[in-house]
Structures are given as structure tokens and as C-alpha cells.
Length: 486
Image (cartoon, rainbow, N blue to C red; front, side, top):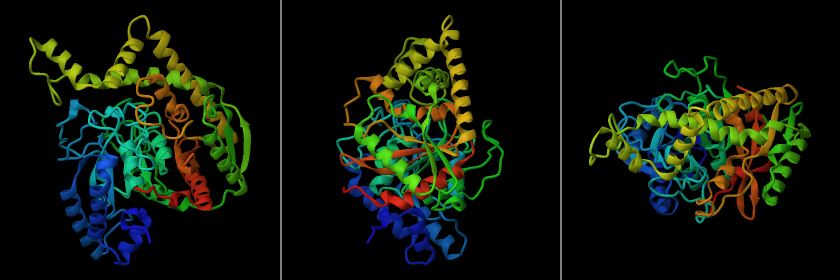
């Protein structure tokens, strides 16, 4: 029998609806699980036990009155870079160590309207800058499948909490792969929606033209249910797109007949682990068995420039966004200083960690006089070429299938002293953010006993196609039912 904390959203919803389980019982089971495993996993920056119990009691009242949604009463974790009114939002940084927002992010507001039970805030790489959650100013999150390994990043706390049974689902943010890569590493489902589909209002900005919020869930059905709740136009976000949101659950059909799928060769990069490639190739063969027409020789030649392009654009935007942390208005402030300039310098010196400083320096250099044209402007032109290449591919194919990551989860500390190797962890995911298209990672099996994800990409606002491909694959394989032994 499945433990209550291991249920999916739709399984828990069915039990709540039939009154075979109450939200309070479910929430207590999840909180008990947090008490059991959190000292080994370290998913949470903050556990909000009292809030969760109060929201669970309220959810049970709504269920009793027949006034509830598919998410009502279901325990969830929110990545700690999304504002939560009255609850600390730290971005896993000393800079915001005691920051309590006076308002909710739009996604949090929408989940509250849907009846969320928030069990806490999830650990991340500081300001979402990293691929392993080792850059958190507080502690490293551990992968529930192997506690000596990273869960991926920057949404490592979110992915690990869902895999470990510490939350039924979670929200993450994705700037260059920060939802999909941890989803692949933790054997859960992670969706990076089309840029502009989900409001960024209340998400602490890293790189504003790349950031996007999305769900981390146990299966594809759950992912569609969360997207139904959080997607849609928001007047508070100037990049939010005003278009109707479909019911994503209607695209969950276990049949791929007539769908054309391309396999871009550039994603099978030099240095990819053979076990990972084998698992991904098997997943592609399975899609073919399910009726899809698969073309294995697709080429997206500009993909090779995506990593360099990303590490100019993202740090440039980060540098501008992080200028607001000056020790004056809010956040950490260095008090022992001779004058205003000294105070600002010390605030940034002691408030930011090494990776954040590295990216501020990269961005400052790329935007400085004499280098702007050579770096930033050229990167924006390459971005246009990458976007055009994807657009052209989607005139021939309904979806593209790639590995989520070139490796299985690596050991904690293994890449900490080699930033370039760490940046290469996102080589399969960051072109998606550059082009603003959607991508979903689904569990595809294991290599050397460690999780491997397969990534499905589509044209802008084609989330329904991604859900269809992901659901058909999931139903045919059953990898989503595996749980780590903790």
C-alpha cells in the first residue's frame, strides 16, 4: 500500500473527495515524513507547520461544503525565491536572510485560491544561480536516491522534497534548466512553461528575460493540474501573455499516432555518460512504438553556441537585477562602515556568496564600455538565431526529444571547484530558456542505479502537445511509480 505522503495529487484528491482521507490527516502524514527525513535531505529553508495545519483544517471545511478544486487540501512546497506574505523569503542568501514579504507572488495567490496547504519554502542555489543546490548560503540539499549526490539546481529543494515524500508537489523556477535538471536528477516530472504563460510577479528576479515558474510533481497528470491553477494572464507582470488557458488534463491521452518527433543530434554532447545516452535512446524507441513518427537525424547547429550565449545574457541581467541589494532599503546591511560607499561595498561583500559575485562580475564585464558590442550585443544576435532555428524545426516536427542532462546526479563537491564543468550541467536545458519555448522532463529510467530524465520540447504555447507525449510515455513505462528508499 502507498503511504499517504507518497500519493499523487489526483490520488489524494480522489480520497479527499470520497471522504476516505481528510486534508488534516494527509498534512500530518507529510509533516511527519518531513520530521523523519529532513535531517538527511535538507529540502526546506523554512517549514511552515502551523500555517499548513490551519490551511488543512480550512480545506476540510471547503471539501465538506462541496466547494473545492483538484488542489484543495494538498500539501505543497514553494521554492524560496517566490514571495509569501508573512513568511520568510530568503532566496537561500544571507542578503535576504530575514526578509518577510508584505505580499504574495501571483502564483502563490492562485494556489491559495485553489486551496493550497503550504508545508514550507524550498532550498535553492543562492538567487537561483547554480545547478546543484550547493550554492545555498545555508546548506546543501541531498538527493533522496543517493544522499551523497546533488539533487540538481537551482530548484533542488523543490525536486528533492517531492521525491522524498516531504511534499506532494512543489513550485520551482527555471532560468536555464533549474526545474528540468533537478526533475531529471530526482526522477520527478518538471515543466518549464513558455515564457509569459505563468506570471513572474513576486518571483525574485535572476534574469528577467529567461526566468519562468513551473511545477515539480510525481507524474504528468499532477503537472497538468498544477498548470491549470497557475497559468494565465496577470496585469502585474508586463511580460505575461494574455491568452486563454486550456484544460491541460484534456491532452493526457496515451496515444502518439500522427505526431512527428525530431531528435536533435547536438544534444548528445561530447562527454555525455554512455548510460544516460542509452536510457534516452530507449525512451525515443518507446515513443516510436507508441505511434510517433521519429526523425533521428535532426540538426540545430546553433545549439553549440547556446552555453556561451546564456552565460553572457543571464549574468548581464543578474547584475542589473541585483543592483537593488545595496543595504539601504531592505535585506542585509553592513553597519560597521566609514561612509555610505563603504557600507554598500561591505553589504555586497558579506551579503552575497561566491557564485553570485562571480555572475555579477561576468555581467558587469559583458556590459562595460568597449565590450558591450563584442559580448552582450553579439549574444542577443545569437539568441535570435537559436530562436529562429527552433521555430524552423517546429514547422516540421510537433516536438523535439533530448536528454535532460548529460550526466546522472554527480557527487556533492565533485564540481564545486570547477565552474565550467558545473555550467556544462545545463547544456541540454538552457537553449530552451534562450528561445522562450516550453520543455518538460519526465523520468526515463536509471543508469548505474541513478535517475535519468528525458526532455520533450515544443513550440511556444504547445504545452498540450508536451503533456500528450509525456503522458503517453509515462503510462507505457511506469517509471513515475518508483520511489527512493529513504
